[in-house]
Length: 161
Image (cartoon, rainbow, N blue to C red; front, side, top):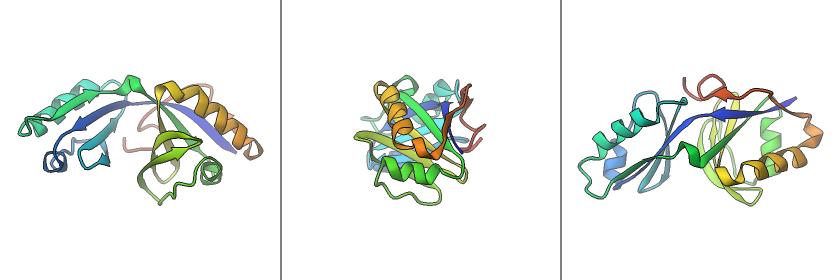
């Protein structure tokens, strides 16, 4: 069985020079290097303001740095179960490692993916939330995909706690 879970997260975007971002590693946050001048930080829901404060303190030496709490701009779908990689292969050609961060085209929308030992977390711009959900169910129908009735918080279903 394949389970699709709505995942609640805090997301912060930090935009600064590469050296400033290299120094950015807030405790408890999953750090995704999106581009040389961009990092996405992910933690459990409700800690976005604290993440912003931490990131601003670290990037303060870069006069052009910008740090934004962007949680509302993202929808996160988590794929769990033994068929999660088979499902993802039906959605995208992006190669997945055993763990880590990748980004690219997933059913024709830009998606950021965090891979951990038991889950695939798909971060999609919020306006594409319903579209991605529909496409997962359409393309993975033979994999017995089920939607979890309740959402889960980041850390409780994979990702660092």
